[in-house]
Image (cartoon, rainbow, N blue to C red):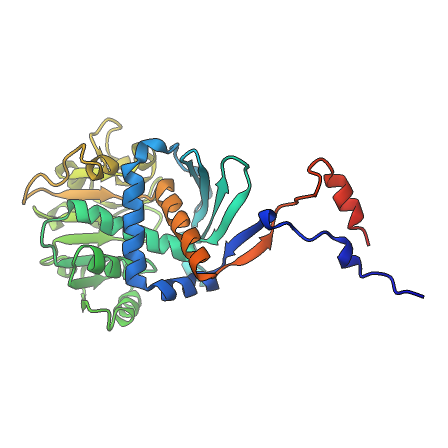
Length: 358
């Protein structure tokens, strides 16, 4: 008597078009080391800059948020008409107390003509990389020429990425560190040992900003905070405000904003989530893409204070995902997921299900 076939054999093998490349956390780490951290940061900055130059070809909208007392979960979608992309991201500052990441993310690209996904990727690491690349890209256009010293206020998960990106893209040579938690500063200094940067741990925020041409704030508390007071910021400084990224969460004194030339990604989103939520809705700001495209001026002079009010935007994630898709193909650092039901006859989804019965 012949043995019955293995029930698993009744399940049709997925077609190649239905298999979705997936870049896991492990694959993303391998990819970063294969490409190199510094080259990858430079590549991401260049890709984002290219996307900003064609800003008008993208559909744009604010993030789609779901808020709770503990944090926020957001979707960040965009498309250029050929490829659709979105990122799922959360921000939960209290997670750190439980040993959890405050920000996690994953992202997807899809073919606009078929709707089929073409990439699924982790984005917790990739968001840290693209955020640092975006910060340094903005500084490349806005910071004082010859900037060599940067203060990093807030030495959490983003701090090392910022430091390395500014070294590679802006030419920063010295990083001055301060965090309300000395253990965070110690961690950051330890991780940056051997990076080629002079790393100076500081006892106060005032000490950290001494002599800095660039000041990055990247704190996690979900509140209207004053990390930098008005008297701490003098003329000729570039501010890179990364931490204010949700309603009711800021880092800079309002008086600083009133003295600064403010540059943003997408005003409707930044007015809700950025430092400028403290200002009148009609307070003038410049969209960074216009500076990159040569339509608007950046830094007006040696004594100007420039502020990049960074909250992150979907086009940056889109550019990062497209880059990762290309690099994953080149390196083979991905898995294939059987994510899409794809029957031989597209009208016979039910039949495919029944034929798979044990």
